Length: 78
Image 1 (cartoon, one colour):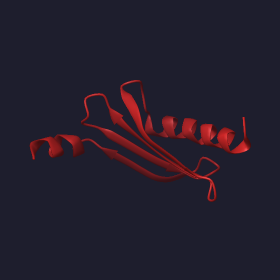
Image 2 (cartoon, one colour; image 1 turned 30 degrees about the horizontal axis):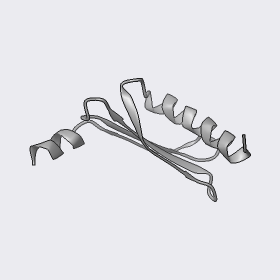
Image 3 (cartoon, one colour; image 1 turned 120 degrees about the horizontal axis):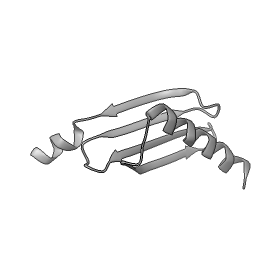
């Protein structure tokens, strides 16, 4: 397992902890920026009404966090 992959898995585990992501969510996006060492991950709930987005640096420090509870519901109305 390469160093980048180990870093990415470490950061992803931290993102799961920070976002309190459980089995009711499906991974939608996992975008690792090798040059900066940042990872952005996004999960969507099984019902489609909730979204969790977390971005961390290479050390597992939180850069951005977003919890959207209404986005999918709003889109279904239109």
